[in-house]
Image (cartoon, rainbow over all chains, first blue to last red; front, side):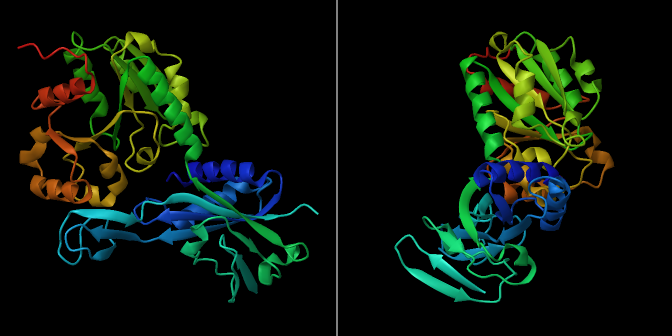
Length: 113
Length: 278
């Protein structure tokens, strides 16, 4: 739903880091607990960049699984549902290890000849 | 194709794998300074073969620009001595009705300003006019096709139209939506979510980001519970699963049941607020 706004934010950041160079790829890392649909983000990206300097730039979306570490039994659990619970002892005292990411990881640019 | 990985410790190694499925972005790319050279490329990037491309690490929060402006909002609001609450809900949960009775009830205790987010109309802002110390309307339709949320820039523009130093509390009424507003920090001190019992008990699991960011969840329309199949206990269990720390307040904005607890919660945000009159 808000993927278009996110695409705008990505484009602004990418243009700043590209510093005038041609960008071929953009890599973003998005955690499982974020409400971002990768297909929708890529579609918005194509729509938004069409006709701009970023036209044709590939957006690679890395999905980061949601992992919690249990503070009681020290087990690590990979979550499917957004319920912060240890799958081993069913305790709720857990620390989120990954899954909250919302990051522009890197861009590939062509060096100016 | 081959990938040459130059690590911060000086080691270089090459991965020979048939890429173009860049889906697996290795986690170790995040360590230190890293440049990957696409020495030779194949497939659909043939146009760029001759010169090769360079990977530039960005490692920037996706909404870093929004967050920067949110921080500026937070600073300005703190300097003006205003505490701010971002009120979010789905459409029709009763935000405006609850807010209206809140403004009337707290008129003598707090100077409350309202920043009203609405996609295109002034209907909600008109309902609140006359009860708040000041109201500023931000129509989000100026965004790309009508934004479904308020962002820090929109709120910043609204702040310029409010007499901040004459306020104790600023209530930001976000656009009715359970997804987008949760992702955008606007510079608030606290986040309130208004949930109505007509929405279904599974909502915390379906919209976990919204329920996770909330400091308080106001469960509205409890006067309707006798007429609904809504399972309040299951809703509360689902809420605890995604957000064990949220304060829960059950109210009916219509009958006034429980609203005093909500008023006190709001007053608790403002250190100088006088106690409730008995």
